[in-house]
Image (cartoon, rainbow, N blue to C red):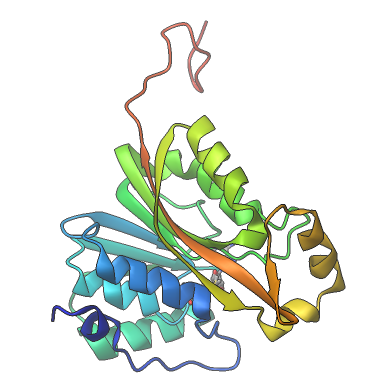
Length: 233
Ligand SMILES: C[S@@+](CC[C@H](N)C(=O)[O-])C[C@H]1O[C@@H](n2cnc3c(N)ncnc32)[C@H](O)[C@@H]1O
Protein backbone atom coordinates (compact mmCIF):
# COMPACT_ATOMS: atom_id res chain seq x y z
CA UNK A 1 0.00 0.00 0.00
CA UNK A 2 1.96 3.01 -1.24
CA UNK A 3 0.16 5.74 -3.13
CA UNK A 4 -1.39 8.58 -1.16
CA UNK A 5 -4.83 7.75 -2.55
CA UNK A 6 -4.47 4.09 -1.52
CA UNK A 7 -3.41 5.17 1.97
CA UNK A 8 -6.44 7.44 2.22
CA UNK A 9 -8.99 4.95 0.90
CA UNK A 10 -11.33 4.07 3.80
CA UNK A 11 -14.91 3.03 4.40
CA UNK A 12 -15.75 4.92 7.60
CA UNK A 13 -18.98 4.35 9.49
CA UNK A 14 -20.46 6.08 12.52
CA UNK A 15 -23.64 7.08 14.29
CA UNK A 16 -25.31 10.46 14.76
CA UNK A 17 -23.17 11.31 17.81
CA UNK A 18 -19.85 10.58 16.10
CA UNK A 19 -17.76 13.30 14.47
CA UNK A 20 -18.03 12.92 10.69
CA UNK A 21 -14.67 13.86 9.15
CA UNK A 22 -14.59 17.38 7.65
CA UNK A 23 -12.10 18.97 5.22
CA UNK A 24 -9.82 19.68 8.24
CA UNK A 25 -9.49 15.97 8.99
CA UNK A 26 -9.18 15.17 5.30
CA UNK A 27 -6.35 17.68 4.87
CA UNK A 28 -4.51 16.41 7.94
CA UNK A 29 -4.87 12.87 6.57
CA UNK A 30 -3.54 13.88 3.15
CA UNK A 31 -0.53 15.58 4.77
CA UNK A 32 0.20 12.56 6.97
CA UNK A 33 -0.13 10.27 3.95
CA UNK A 34 2.23 12.34 1.81
CA UNK A 35 5.07 12.78 4.34
CA UNK A 36 7.28 10.19 6.05
CA UNK A 37 6.86 11.19 9.69
CA UNK A 38 5.17 8.16 11.27
CA UNK A 39 7.26 5.02 10.68
CA UNK A 40 8.61 3.42 13.88
CA UNK A 41 7.10 6.00 16.26
CA UNK A 42 5.05 5.62 19.43
CA UNK A 43 2.05 7.82 18.65
CA UNK A 44 -0.63 9.38 20.86
CA UNK A 45 -3.69 10.47 18.88
CA UNK A 46 -6.06 12.87 20.64
CA UNK A 47 -9.76 12.85 19.67
CA UNK A 48 -9.68 9.92 17.24
CA UNK A 49 -13.30 10.13 16.05
CA UNK A 50 -14.04 7.63 13.28
CA UNK A 51 -10.38 6.47 13.24
CA UNK A 52 -9.65 8.23 9.94
CA UNK A 53 -6.17 9.13 11.20
CA UNK A 54 -5.74 6.07 13.40
CA UNK A 55 -6.04 3.76 10.37
CA UNK A 56 -3.59 5.93 8.47
CA UNK A 57 -1.08 5.93 11.34
CA UNK A 58 -1.20 2.13 11.29
CA UNK A 59 -0.80 2.02 7.50
CA UNK A 60 2.15 4.44 7.75
CA UNK A 61 3.99 2.07 10.10
CA UNK A 62 3.57 3.57 13.59
CA UNK A 63 5.35 1.37 16.16
CA UNK A 64 2.44 1.77 18.59
CA UNK A 65 -0.73 3.85 18.75
CA UNK A 66 -2.73 5.07 21.72
CA UNK A 67 -5.92 6.76 20.45
CA UNK A 68 -8.22 8.72 22.75
CA UNK A 69 -11.77 9.99 22.84
CA UNK A 70 -13.65 11.91 25.45
CA UNK A 71 -16.20 9.14 26.16
CA UNK A 72 -16.28 5.35 25.96
CA UNK A 73 -19.23 5.44 23.58
CA UNK A 74 -17.33 7.62 21.07
CA UNK A 75 -14.52 5.06 21.15
CA UNK A 76 -16.98 2.44 19.84
CA UNK A 77 -16.86 3.82 16.29
CA UNK A 78 -13.08 4.36 16.54
CA UNK A 79 -12.62 0.66 17.40
CA UNK A 80 -15.09 -0.62 14.81
CA UNK A 81 -13.62 1.37 11.93
CA UNK A 82 -10.04 0.63 12.92
CA UNK A 83 -10.59 -3.12 13.30
CA UNK A 84 -12.51 -3.37 10.01
CA UNK A 85 -9.50 -1.89 8.19
CA UNK A 86 -6.52 -3.07 10.23
CA UNK A 87 -7.67 -6.15 12.18
CA UNK A 88 -8.09 -6.72 15.91
CA UNK A 89 -4.56 -7.73 16.89
CA UNK A 90 -2.44 -4.67 16.04
CA UNK A 91 -1.80 -3.59 19.63
CA UNK A 92 -3.86 -0.40 19.23
CA UNK A 93 -4.80 0.97 22.65
CA UNK A 94 -8.01 2.99 22.91
CA UNK A 95 -8.41 5.22 25.96
CA UNK A 96 -11.01 7.55 27.35
CA UNK A 97 -9.08 10.70 28.22
CA UNK A 98 -9.76 14.38 28.61
CA UNK A 99 -7.26 15.81 26.15
CA UNK A 100 -3.69 15.51 27.49
CA UNK A 101 -4.80 14.12 30.86
CA UNK A 102 -3.48 10.65 30.20
CA UNK A 103 -0.29 8.69 30.91
CA UNK A 104 2.73 7.58 28.94
CA UNK A 105 5.53 9.07 26.87
CA UNK A 106 5.35 9.26 23.10
CA UNK A 107 7.46 10.27 20.11
CA UNK A 108 4.56 12.00 18.38
CA UNK A 109 1.13 13.46 19.14
CA UNK A 110 -1.37 13.72 16.28
CA UNK A 111 -4.64 15.63 16.42
CA UNK A 112 -7.34 17.58 14.65
CA UNK A 113 -8.17 19.67 17.74
CA UNK A 114 -11.72 20.92 18.34
CA UNK A 115 -11.92 24.62 17.49
CA UNK A 116 -15.21 26.10 16.24
CA UNK A 117 -17.12 23.70 18.48
CA UNK A 118 -14.54 23.47 21.27
CA UNK A 119 -17.14 24.54 23.83
CA UNK A 120 -14.55 26.72 25.59
CA UNK A 121 -14.58 30.49 26.19
CA UNK A 122 -11.11 30.46 24.68
CA UNK A 123 -12.11 28.69 21.47
CA UNK A 124 -8.43 27.92 20.80
CA UNK A 125 -8.20 26.10 24.14
CA UNK A 126 -7.31 22.68 22.68
CA UNK A 127 -4.68 24.16 20.35
CA UNK A 128 -3.18 26.30 23.12
CA UNK A 129 -3.22 23.39 25.54
CA UNK A 130 -1.45 21.17 23.02
CA UNK A 131 1.29 23.74 22.55
CA UNK A 132 1.69 24.47 26.28
CA UNK A 133 1.34 20.98 27.76
CA UNK A 134 2.12 18.34 25.14
CA UNK A 135 5.69 18.22 26.47
CA UNK A 136 4.36 16.29 29.49
CA UNK A 137 3.51 13.41 27.12
CA UNK A 138 6.45 13.80 24.72
CA UNK A 139 9.95 12.38 24.88
CA UNK A 140 12.86 14.77 24.27
CA UNK A 141 12.74 15.80 20.62
CA UNK A 142 9.07 14.79 20.52
CA UNK A 143 6.80 15.98 17.75
CA UNK A 144 3.30 17.31 17.09
CA UNK A 145 1.30 17.00 13.90
CA UNK A 146 -1.99 18.86 13.86
CA UNK A 147 -4.30 20.87 11.64
CA UNK A 148 -5.98 24.20 12.23
CA UNK A 149 -7.99 26.86 10.46
CA UNK A 150 -6.77 30.36 9.63
CA UNK A 151 -9.68 31.52 11.80
CA UNK A 152 -7.82 30.09 14.82
CA UNK A 153 -4.91 32.44 13.95
CA UNK A 154 -2.03 30.79 12.14
CA UNK A 155 0.56 33.37 13.22
CA UNK A 156 -0.41 33.03 16.89
CA UNK A 157 0.15 29.28 16.68
CA UNK A 158 3.56 29.75 15.05
CA UNK A 159 4.58 32.29 17.74
CA UNK A 160 3.32 30.12 20.61
CA UNK A 161 5.08 27.02 19.27
CA UNK A 162 8.34 28.95 18.99
CA UNK A 163 7.97 30.48 22.47
CA UNK A 164 7.29 27.04 23.96
CA UNK A 165 10.35 25.36 22.52
CA UNK A 166 9.15 23.88 19.22
CA UNK A 167 10.70 24.26 15.81
CA UNK A 168 7.78 24.45 13.38
CA UNK A 169 7.19 23.71 9.72
CA UNK A 170 4.03 23.64 7.65
CA UNK A 171 3.34 20.32 5.99
CA UNK A 172 0.95 22.09 3.66
CA UNK A 173 -2.00 24.44 3.40
CA UNK A 174 -5.21 24.44 1.44
CA UNK A 175 -8.32 26.57 1.24
CA UNK A 176 -12.00 25.71 1.42
CA UNK A 177 -15.42 27.34 1.83
CA UNK A 178 -16.93 27.79 5.29
CA UNK A 179 -18.81 24.84 6.78
CA UNK A 180 -22.54 25.51 7.22
CA UNK A 181 -22.38 25.22 11.02
CA UNK A 182 -20.02 28.25 11.27
CA UNK A 183 -22.91 30.53 10.27
CA UNK A 184 -25.12 29.03 12.99
CA UNK A 185 -22.82 30.37 15.75
CA UNK A 186 -23.14 34.17 15.82
CA UNK A 187 -20.36 34.53 18.41
CA UNK A 188 -17.99 32.52 16.23
CA UNK A 189 -18.80 34.72 13.24
CA UNK A 190 -18.03 37.81 15.37
CA UNK A 191 -14.81 36.40 16.79
CA UNK A 192 -13.32 35.59 13.41
CA UNK A 193 -13.57 39.25 12.39
CA UNK A 194 -10.83 40.00 14.95
CA UNK A 195 -8.32 37.51 13.45
CA UNK A 196 -6.05 39.10 10.88
CA UNK A 197 -6.13 37.01 7.72
CA UNK A 198 -8.72 34.75 9.35
CA UNK A 199 -10.66 34.26 6.13
CA UNK A 200 -10.96 35.49 2.56
CA UNK A 201 -14.08 36.38 0.63
CA UNK A 202 -14.23 35.66 -3.10
CA UNK A 203 -17.38 36.23 -5.17
CA UNK A 204 -19.41 36.48 -1.98
CA UNK A 205 -18.14 33.14 -0.64
CA UNK A 206 -16.08 32.99 2.56
CA UNK A 207 -13.00 30.72 2.52
CA UNK A 208 -10.76 29.55 5.36
CA UNK A 209 -7.20 28.32 5.02
CA UNK A 210 -6.30 24.99 6.60
CA UNK A 211 -2.73 24.46 7.75
CA UNK A 212 -1.17 21.16 8.78
CA UNK A 213 1.68 21.89 11.22
CA UNK A 214 4.65 19.72 12.13
CA UNK A 215 6.40 20.89 15.30
CA UNK A 216 9.42 19.34 17.04
CA UNK A 217 10.75 20.05 20.52
CA UNK A 218 14.19 21.61 20.42
CA UNK A 219 16.95 20.35 22.75
CA UNK A 220 16.56 22.20 26.02
CA UNK A 221 16.94 21.64 29.77
CA UNK A 222 15.86 24.03 32.51
CA UNK A 223 18.71 25.71 34.43
CA UNK A 224 19.79 23.96 37.66
CA UNK A 225 18.34 26.84 39.68
CA UNK A 226 14.84 26.47 38.18
CA UNK A 227 11.92 25.74 40.47
CA UNK A 228 10.68 22.35 39.33
CA UNK A 229 7.67 20.40 40.63
CA UNK A 230 8.55 18.08 43.52
CA UNK A 231 11.91 19.76 44.14
CA UNK A 232 12.80 21.01 47.63
CA UNK A 233 14.76 24.22 47.97
C1 LIG B 1 -12.45 18.03 15.12
S1 LIG B 1 -12.92 16.45 15.73
C2 LIG B 1 -11.70 15.39 14.98
C3 LIG B 1 -12.11 13.95 14.88
C4 LIG B 1 -11.20 13.11 13.96
N1 LIG B 1 -9.87 13.01 14.49
C5 LIG B 1 -11.18 13.75 12.59
O1 LIG B 1 -10.20 14.42 12.26
O2 LIG B 1 -12.17 13.60 11.86
C6 LIG B 1 -12.34 16.53 17.41
C7 LIG B 1 -12.48 15.25 18.18
O3 LIG B 1 -12.01 15.50 19.49
C8 LIG B 1 -12.89 14.87 20.40
N2 LIG B 1 -12.81 15.60 21.67
C9 LIG B 1 -13.53 16.66 22.08
N3 LIG B 1 -13.15 17.05 23.31
C10 LIG B 1 -12.16 16.21 23.68
C11 LIG B 1 -11.37 16.09 24.86
N4 LIG B 1 -11.53 16.90 25.90
N5 LIG B 1 -10.43 15.10 24.91
C12 LIG B 1 -10.28 14.26 23.85
N6 LIG B 1 -10.99 14.34 22.71
C13 LIG B 1 -11.92 15.30 22.62
C14 LIG B 1 -14.25 14.94 19.75
O4 LIG B 1 -15.13 13.94 20.26
C15 LIG B 1 -13.90 14.73 18.28
O5 LIG B 1 -13.91 13.38 17.91
